[in-house]
Image 1 (cartoon, rainbow, N blue to C red):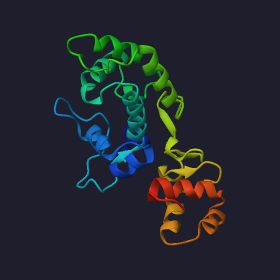
Image 2 (spheres, helix red, strand yellow):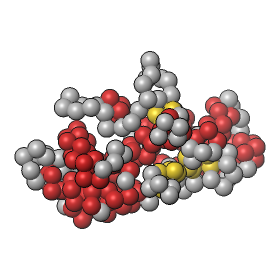
Image 3 (cartoon, one colour):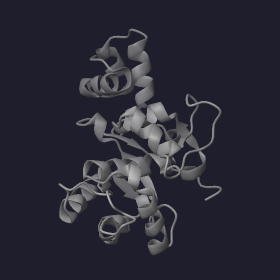
Image 4 (cartoon, helix red, strand yellow):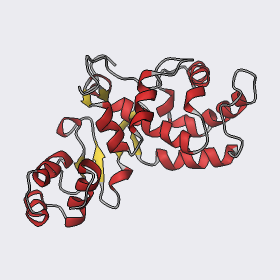
Length: 222
């Protein structure tokens, strides 16, 4: 993994990563830093400041799947021992982004939650089938390469506009799928006071895509 940009190139700060994934910032920071009972849940690069880029592509994909598990009723603050068990079962480090998570992995999590060590891992309202369905839906946003590791991530928070991150294109920055325009460049023009229609024409995108960039990155309407 030492020469694979999916793991080595930091694409954005934790705050920006949370924004692009639609995950609460505090939640993302806890996942990246770890909980009192365990270490980090994501593979984040070390930096001197939280404002620096520290989140590589693989951590974005991990966080997206972890958010799916959270939405399904799995408690991330209790998941570290379960992830270690999954790593032993699957024989791989990046178990959150394993295609097998939704099948064998969910069963392992479910069985582990029924043990003393896994008590409290899964909320009482959640059933195994529900967890599997929600995580499967989240995994539809992840593209996998021939090595069974993620190589593309669609960003749901921008929908209905299609935005994706490809670690091998545009330096791994989020782009509008149809035009290839960087979302950050669109937002920068809006922030500078340019009219949305002009921004749309400049980047070859529709006005709805411009509005999506403003909503997600600037926190306002365009």
